[in-house]
Structure formats: C-alpha cells, structure tokens
Image (cartoon, rainbow, N blue to C red; front, side, top):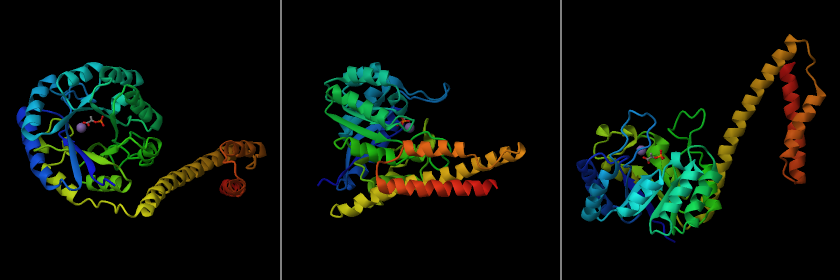
Length: 346
Ligand code: PEP
Ligand code: MN
C-alpha cells in the first residue's frame, strides 16, 4: 500500500520572478528532507486571479509562464496553474504547464467547465477540480466526470471548503462529510485537501491537515510564500516555507495496518457531524414552537391542533426508511416531540 501523500504547494499568486524563485528554492530545500512521507508533485500558483473586488490584484497573466519555465528547469518541479476559461486552458497547454486546477468559483458553472474540458481533451495534463463554493457534491462529481469524459487520464479532486451560513471558525466550512462521500462515490479519484482556503489563517492549518489525513485524504495543497506579509493576495493564509516544513513534520500518518480503526473513525466523525446538525435543528425547532405559542396566545387559539400535527407526521413518513425498527423509533420520537412541543406551549 502506498502511504505517500501527494503534495502541491506554492504561492497563492505569481507576483514576480523573484518571489516565485525564492519560494520555489525554499520548497526545494525542504522537499529533499521530507521525501519519505510526501511526494511533492506540483508547484502551484495562480496567474489569473478570481478576486472578489475589482480593485484587488488580478494576477500578472501569461507573463508568469516564462518565470515558471525557469522554476521547472532550476528545481525540476512540475507546474500547476488555475484556469477559469478555455483561453486560459489553451495557454497552459501551449506553455507546457503540467497540471491545471479549476477553481471553486469556476466549478459552479457547468458551461465553463465543459468548455475547459473540451479545450484540454486528450491532452496529458493532470486536472484538479476544486469543490464548488456551494456544498453540492453532485456539481463537484459532475465537473470531474466532464474531464474524465474528455479523455483526461489523471483527474484529482481538491477540497477547499464551502461558503455556508453561520461559519465563524473557518474561512470556508470544511463540511468533511462531502469530500468523504466523494471519495466513496469516485474511489479512483485522489482527493486532496487545500488547507489554506479552508483555514483562512496560519494557525488552523495543522489541525485541518491532520483531520484530512485521518479521513484518508490522498494529499494536501498548501499556499506557501517566502514572505507572506508582502503577498498581494491571501496573505493571512500563506505559510512560510519553514512553517510548511514544520506542519508536515508534525502530521501523524495513520497506521496502514489498522484499517478497522480508520474506517470507524471516518464513520464516527460523519455521525458526529450529523448529530451536531440535528441538535442545532432541534433547538431551532423549539424556538419556532415558542413563536407559535405566542401567536396562539395572542389570538386565543387552542394549543392542540390535531390536523396540523397530522401534516408534521406526514413529512417524517415521506422520508422514512422502509424498515420496521425505524418505523417504531419514529413513532416514539414523534410522540415525544409532540408532547414536548405542547408542554412548551402550555
Ligand atoms: C487559490 O487556490 O488560490 C484559489 C483562488 O482557490 P479557490 O478556487 O479555492 O478559491
Ligand atoms: Mn489563494
């Protein structure tokens, strides 16, 4: 069993020849040290940047291809660049880029993804597909299939987190159950974790990387800059080369022999996520019940309204697993839910 993890690292954006060179040199020096556990496959950088605000640094464009050729010659790194259009993809092929990645804001658009897939079809490029910004596994899997259908032999998925409501720890919510489900759905596609865009800062990345490894991810993508404080984009989440080396040293790789523990770990964490959601939803439901109580009291309506309760039961029955044990559980659970709701209202 190959336990080596794929590594992709480099700055968020190519900014200058000097910045790329200094960053690549530092990565090269540490890479020789860590060759045992990690397989450094690509030096990454954005040359066209999809920025939220029009005034922000938009990338240097195709000027960077010359700088990247130098990195390839000097350090032997293969190069990975983000594309957001068929024109970008064609330019990457013309400039001998080894891999491209489709960014989160591009994966959401099947028209553009298909145009990129058509532009690179039957090429030897490796294509990495980041998850769409919204937590939609089918949109992600669909984009991956478009590249497989275009004859791309090496396609990988990159988990970079999702934009969801009420996320206040991470820049992009990990929603680990989605990449784990993608791995089950597409077992031949390596899944990497982009620790920078999930964390949004330096301090959370060790933990995000360890969680990804524990979940059985096939590798990591990181943003590394020789001087993050000077970076023109994503400066808070770019690691110094030494911080990246330290992060890798501190990752505990799972014991390949203990498969049962690994499989249980994954499922237990999925359950934990579901329980968190159920507990939050139940609290929310109680709050709405309190609102309903206020309305009923104001209009002197009876607390118990049997027809309304019948409608609630129907919702649960519609989504019910076809299994006797579960039916019994649901009956008891709904009874309890109804009782506590009435008690609150009284
Ligand atoms: C990036 O990797 O620099 C980037 C812009 O990523 P994402 O598409 O995940 O936002
Ligand atoms: Mn970035």
